[in-house]
Length: 213
Image (cartoon, rainbow, N blue to C red; front, side):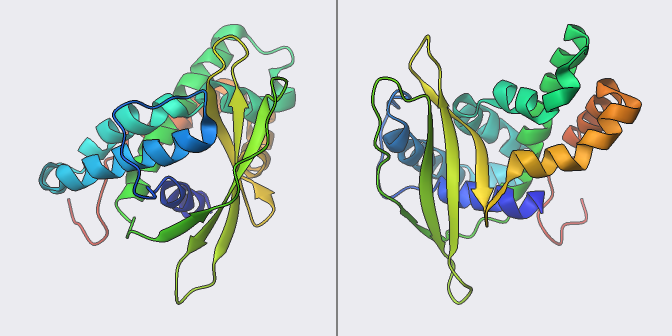
């Protein structure tokens, strides 16, 4: 399920033909499109290197996507009730491991991307007090049915910059689903146990489908 959602995430960051050298993170709707343009142009330019060394996709994700993902906030939301009484060092270790896990997951999904077409919904209405918004996107994946998604973004009150922290697909939050999956283990075995598992998953090499390497 996570692999499916991450593929959709990458698809929804696809460019609408907008290229820019500078990305203004204080304008979330515009930001999503420009991050996509920059990321996928780089993927096209570096296909030779990526095919030779698939792990280079982790570098692309780290440099092009992660600056616009609020992984720390997402990790804290994922821990939810398990934050109560938790050691700060353990929480920081989990957040670090979760970030690395996201990088590897995004990189692996980028091996499956096949240039799906997308349509952005209307730009969200915001005012100075708005701190959370949703950006709606439709993936056109003919002959399969269209997929309607909503990205959740959060505004940093100090910098006024926006970052993505969750995605809702078919009415289900990615964060909520992972929280349900990991909550019992965190509660029974502790935050560090799950953090170690995430670290192991994050170290997995990136492979193209059918590759034996």
